[in-house]
Length: 437
Figure: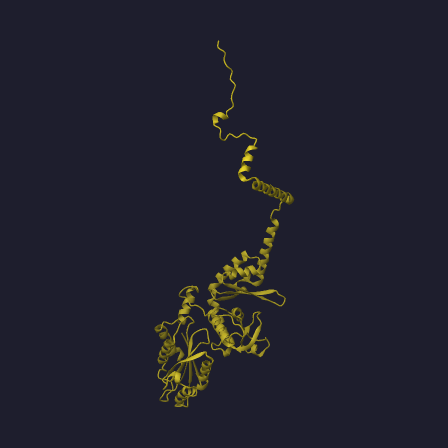
């Protein structure tokens, strides 16, 4: 479980955000704590009036709106009742147990999460101190709740990554089930949010290019705009949907408009963290690349062999069709490497040269194979043997196999002694009779 706390100056704006999700069918009000009515009976005015009435008890405090969110792992199966208990325990642990608050369950992302709206003004007009609340009260509450309700924690994820467990291991965390985004068939922002959230938190990339290489597998792209544009100079970032041909379509959405804030600034922090995390998986990738190069004589066969090992090869081409770069995406270890980062012999030029070299070796072997000296004579012999066999089969069909065998034995010229005793096979010798004296 991961908690996020945001302070603001407008309770109405925070409530409107959740109520709009409610109208769109992407949220559900599951709890109204310390309200006079049940959650199902509250109108928009009832919800807002209870919060603003208490906030006015201390008008000196301008930032009187508190908007929290509790985010859970995609693998978690949380019921409405369990989320209610988690919300109540969390608010109690951070000192907001007696405050009026509303709990919304959202279903517009790839992971289960809830939003909690409340105020930091107590019933007696005092202000709840929120300095370092995330580091102190919230962090302690998060760990206790994760242990009490047996939730998957970020510490568990880091331990699994450190141990290097495979995704097929029963204790490993399964990634969110991300489907390819198709423009016009799904809600654009929600679909992009699901893909970006999954890639941003699960893959190990060290540049915007590598991050984009994975996003393109799901028809999404992070766009900085033209090099001379104002957005590019100010390090702005938008997200676009790509069609089947890889062309940008639809309206771009700013990175800051998404809940998880996948801005260039936050991505650059990920680049630094992932630099060390992916190093341990580089050896596996080099091994499979070397093996595939020995077997294949073209880029297509090379890519097909790596694909069987869950490794995707993305080649970058210029306008003339020349390949100038390669990116390798290991879907098993969730690591992304540019070819040159693995070493000089894994760059695009080196791999293409190796493919051409293997192709030439194969062609030389074919040329060196010994050819028949008399191909016409061989074909004539084969024709004669085939004719002889056909004639024998024709005779056997006309005369019959038994008669043919008998005829063959009668026409044989050599003597057959198979059934004669040995004594009779000996030639008689003429002996001279001795005359009696």
